[in-house]
Length: 196
Image (cartoon, rainbow, N blue to C red; front, side, top):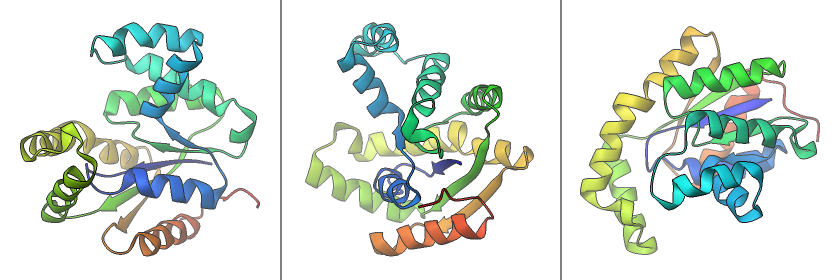
């Protein structure tokens, strides 16, 4: 079972993906964390990514897709994986689908977190005060939201066109309640959840 957790910046993807992956008993695959881990391990993929990351350049989609492919080949991913932060563009979604298809896999369900823009702004500004993230300034957030609308939101339309199950979940409320909504929505979608 391959699940993609999808939503705008500040929607709670990072928090929810860890919780939902634990519930589903599949690995949480966050591409940023994976890239850093591969570099730290000194793997072949990490050695390829490190010079790009150290100079602030974007890591090419094909390298990220290969990392995801390597990750889902690991024994703990036999029942699937939950992807957090990928795909962010339609070309990435197509590359992911090609890699999964070569393994007789597919994205089984896309969970889309719905949070209105005012709530997203409030969350990001609160997070900036607590965590001090450089990308959580009002200006940076507005740019990230615009980029999401232009580059990332069309990924949902791509998956709709491919006939992939998409479940939309209200992403506002207590963390535990949102997690429950997501897990119930996945179960109701008819997606086969790995045996516990």
